[in-house]
Image 1 (cartoon, helix red, strand yellow):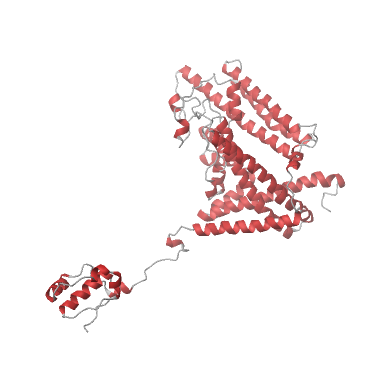
Image 2 (image 1 turned 45 degrees about the vertical axis):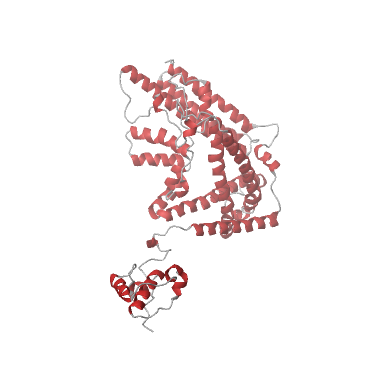
Length: 503
């Protein structure tokens, strides 16, 4: 029996050819190898190649050259573990799914524990009491109705400014008085009228805050139009960097990325002062934007299926938020009053962490409900084509980026009516940005934004932003509820000095 060829790592085809060539050259028969079983087409039939032909085939080399032993036996190479940052691996979808499953299971346990401890607390009828104390007194609704007077006052001032019946200084004074009243009047009513509820006050103040921002933009844009008209009469051009409030028909913006919505759209262009009408004003007041334009981007039709989906989401998420608040948050907040009163810090932290999960879940639901479902439903009804109400704030690596992208209508307003006017007046970009940040994020976010931007980057910054959202909001909720509880429930039963610290 002749020597067998090395079978290390060779394929079936190269093994058979090499074995047959060697066997024929030595006049010996080669028994079929194991690989012949898997390659019947190579071993079947008579072999007609003689020894000389076999040697010639061997000298010419096989169809597949045999691998070297060092290459065949090597199974290691330089590489990093997948969890190492140098590996470049980024597909953690399975771990993400595991986190979602664990989150669902842990919250399901908490929800079941809540049901066993408190029973079913969801009562949709009880929600009415949050808006009304006295069924014959509707102060919050009356406040919202009275808001029309301030909007009509702004329209009348603009009409008189357009025809020259008022000077610009007098118009500025009237607008400033009107806007100051918009801010102060509802706050005074909410503070002095006892029949108004906290929820009713919040809704009324929200309406007046939105009205203030809209009327501020309404005044600014009409002022720009008058300045442009004056420059046109004087033969001057429009200054560089200043906003153009009255675009040409070709410059009208369209809804980005949606060809079907804008296909065949023919929009009538409105010029100043033809925009000073009740129809134009109230379209702007109800449109889901804070920035006024003479010609808004419009969609050609109302998509009924899209609108029905958004309305269904509004109804469903409204009931879900009410149920989660009544069943999950209210008992936790009620149980947190005694630790706050006793200043038991360990119990306060425990209550805070227990409130963090339901509060954050409700906040996420509220975000989707308001910024996606509600605003898209209103935009669809009014054929308002600019639907950019939010950006990817969930990828924020700094608090500043979060505030710039989670509420686009407010960010656009701050950028258009606060940031750019400050730059045109010669203010540095850093001061202008800080001013916009103060207007949008308020004072309590300044230290937090500095800490996150200074010490956290990349994924760590994103985790820090999420942590501030999850923990920061429950702290604010507990503080507001504690102050309301002390002022409205303990004060009538305590002496005037009982709330003061002991000497």
